Amino acid sequence: MSNTPSKKPAPARKKAAVAVRAAQDVTNEETSSPASKRKGAPLKEEQEDESVGEEERPAVAPPAKRRKAAAALSSPARRPTAAGDRESTEEARTKHIGKKFSPGNGQLDYTLTAPEPTRDVRRTFHFEGYPTFLPNLSPEEILRQGSFGGGFFRAIKSKRSGKELHDDWEDLPKEWWKGLPVSTHLTRPEPHDGKVNKWGAKVGQPYEEWEKNGWIVAEHDARGWFQWYCRFFRGRRIGDEDDRQIGRWDRLAGEASGRWRRIFYGKYHKAGLREVERDAEEISKGIRQTLNHWAYEPTTEDLFRYLDEKGVPIANEAEAGDLNE
Image (cartoon, rainbow, N blue to C red; front, top):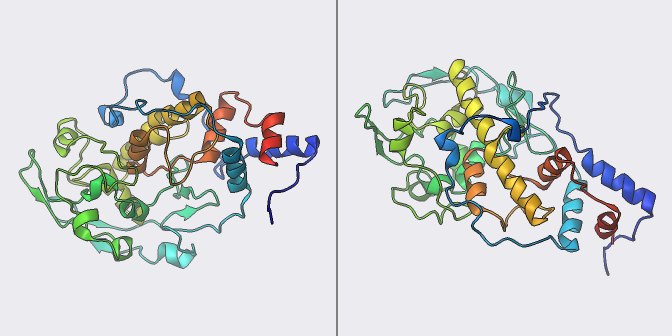
């Protein structure tokens, strides 16, 4: 027996299209500066994917995909959560406050002072006091997806300090990597071929380039942005360095000025696609893997928001009919 709903009358279809366009973020923090108006060259780190756009792209998504996208947006909302899919309670978000860590390898000791983030029904994280920092992947999710080729915490020797980094992942909560093979998902040695990454694309620059370009503040996070994100997510706060790292995230993956985020959705618009599939990528696996490293997973809803900002009709009469056939 078919579960396909009957076609709704035109007023109902119009109402459905308006509802899709009206999808709102829970944060009141909005910015009106599109990436197209930004001046100046992007940071080199923001150019992780050198071959974007070379994949073969389909011309337009078929009606079946548009129906699937609409169904995803109309599915029952999830309850807000903290880390990963664990239920968010005040006790769970604050029980770690006061814990002290000594990561070693020349990095400063630190104490957790802030609660873990909340997660809204769109699966976006919200950190108290940082309304514009809105990643939607937790550190645990990133690690479990094999990001960084499974070798972000591999043994590395710093050319600047001469120190060897190793075992500085042990301040991570054990539940983040429970059940994962450490040798393939945390400390996998170079070189790796990218196959362990969720999107199978090898992106990024070597650690030596990170140091050379001044992206590493070794006394805080000797391995860079993702290590900073792990500790920030847990509740460490270090003032100006937090602002610097959040600024870097915003320039790469933020809604208003995230260069690779906007390029990604621009490619979907050019290809005529109206759905971002959760476990498949037809446009650019390289950009999607880069965004994954920076704690952002593209979504159909965010694609619609991008198109709406550009003045692109998200669902005209014909599409609204397709969505309900």
